[in-house]
Image 1 (cartoon, rainbow over the protein chains, first blue to last red):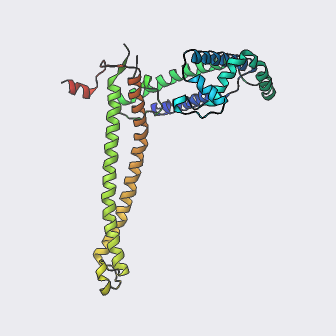
Image 2 (cartoon, one colour):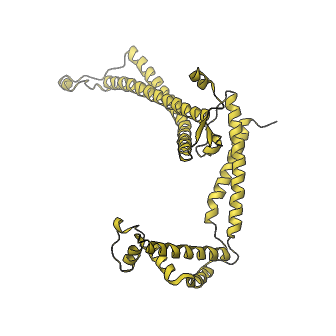
Image 3 (tube, each protein chain N blue to C red):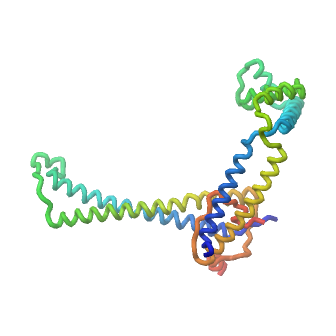
Length: 169
Length: 134
């Protein structure tokens, strides 16, 4: 016996929920050593240039960083209330890539061997999940529209993709 | 220029309005029946306990008395009202279970249209749009 449209939608929704959970869990999965190194290097480079830029353009960041070092109070006038981040940017600017090796030694001591996935692999998985979600949600919306056209009614998910529901093109 | 299916957003809005109106109607019914129920219950309890119905009656405190035939009928009515109220609350919960996700989706859709500056696509008019156009 063929499943009813309601049953099919319900099955699709289970798959969609599972994919959402998988997608949401992905950023929490540890990266492998090489990817952590790559990300760390990118982070340091980014913070370094951000610090330089802030310094050069006399934005509010430099006084804040100095204030954090001297333990001066930081308030809304002096910029964001994130002295640790300001200090990290300053450290990146001063030490640059020399920070990578000692930090990676710490990471390697804590990360189990062969643990984690590569950044590439994570992005690939994310892409795959997104494209599968798109396919399933389109199928779900098509079935909902068919039911509505037949005078039947079904509640759409609160987290349905507006682009799909509204057929945005 | 990016577009969105206007009739689908309108249908969502209509559905939210319908469900909101249904929920408000149920709330009114529950309140009306609740008031009636409380009035009957208070009367029966006064009769059964002999409680004066007014503070100044204290001096002439009544004695408890058995319920009259009419009041026994009121007891049945009370039970029916309780059943009615329970059924109405049940319906209200079912409506709320539909309303919450539909309203959340409508808000997300409206924000999506605004954020992406989408233009309405009138390509697929539904019956109400036809009426509007006519």
